[in-house]
Length: 154
Image 1 (cartoon, helix red, strand yellow):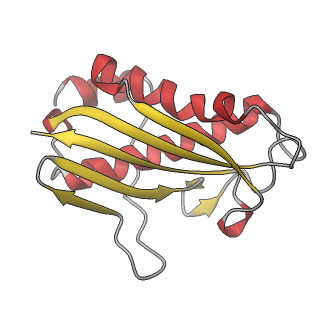
Image 2 (cartoon, helix red, strand yellow):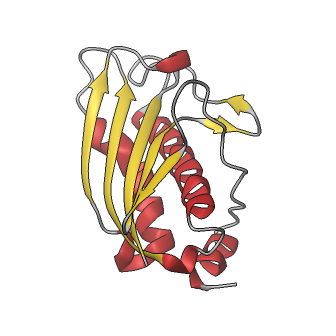
């Protein structure tokens, strides 16, 4: 096991099997040294969690936990993309976060911090990334957030 897997273990995180796509796309694409991870939602143990809108059904803190769950699913896809060897990860390049929120909600970055913080916690300096955080009027299955990612690998 490598340092990244050791960090996941220390955090009490067991990466799930990556979710299978539900339409005509793939969970990730590797091209050159980049891995593009499709948007990951709040799926845990085969069930959707955090169903509803941030600012109505969930607080900022609960939204951040939803984003953290998305990041765990991103890492699961990444692990599959690198054939199980997370030590191949050179850095997280970018996260893109969508928050299912009420129109007057403005703390989208604080929600997506739940994902950013986990990625940095797991990858250290390799986890520091560019990012966007946007509000959405709705998301698939009414999940609280969806996040995609780009990583550089060796």
